[in-house]
Image (cartoon, rainbow over all chains, first blue to last red; front, side, top):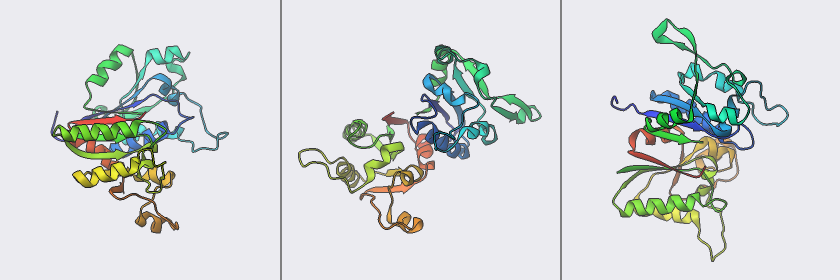
Length: 136
Length: 130
């Protein structure tokens, strides 16, 4: 670990609506991006609903923050782990998710997908490998 | 050990703030350093000085204020979360054109960067409330 750089994992476990956690988690991620730490995002439990494409908040009358997920790549948030079991349990597949992309500066700025589907077991390893875990 | 504490729930509805307080007291008794306590989500509601709990119950805000005074703790309330929920200091009252402010003594309002910085500086960041 180079000095002053820690591995931050933001764990998103709740649906995008019903509570404010998803929105306020994103606010932390965006501010945190300015600190040049090693950042990873995890989506599990009902948190996987945050990444389902096509939602908006028009009928809810609350702020529509769906587009913010698509912008994560611009904030150099490029590692987004989604737990496979959480998708399965909710009848979702990878095809239901937004296509989050980032430009890889080490590969001639090629556009690459940010989302990686991982098993529950892999998710546990990802959590164990991080220094700071903020769970929302 | 250098500890950071995150409080994500308000007083009374959830026990999270009480538990965080008890954790902080126990950690200080054991000789640990508390670098910062950060109040986020509904946790910002711990910082209003206008709560009036019944006399036979604890006053959570007051307990935090007294602990801050005793140990010179850094109690930070997230500004974005606070503004949504009507927690203002005198400066924010003026800036937002409001007619009152309610932040309790010992708390200060600042940005989310303070949370990230606590994560960087502390050996452990301990979260209370979901």
